[in-house]
Length: 174
Image (cartoon, rainbow, N blue to C red; front, top):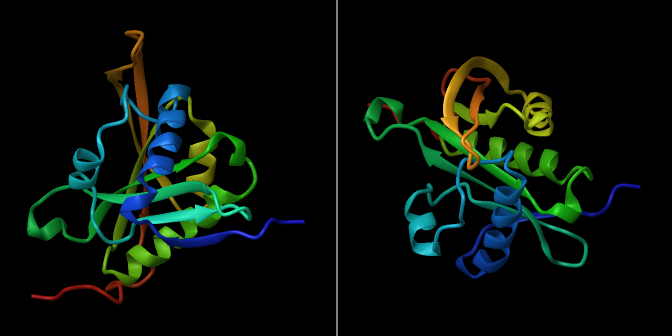
């Protein structure tokens, strides 16, 4: 039986739990090239203010979070964003990521984003499967793009999800 999951907008007071989940992701060495969780102000400044979501476990704890970042500041790319999604250790493998990413995609499209992309590290097969299940496809592989904290060269997969409509509901025309 599937657990009840609640998705809501992320709030600044969620930061301690969000940061803990991010730190757990960093510790896997498969989720990001980051080696430490930044302070809230730096993290907040680097992510789009809309489309920030958390998913709650039945006990009310934050089980995961998902946000968007600008890919490029040029106006022509206003509808393209990078996805970040993290699920806490004890909630992985229980459908939280799927529900959260599905909700983020829906909210992003309603806000006018026509392309979502995600960079998935080569060893993160679970993330690649999750993104594919949510309609993302591999559009490229970047070989030896960065070194991990041990100095090992890693590849990344660029995955992309396009809006179904030519112009999403929140699309801003000239």
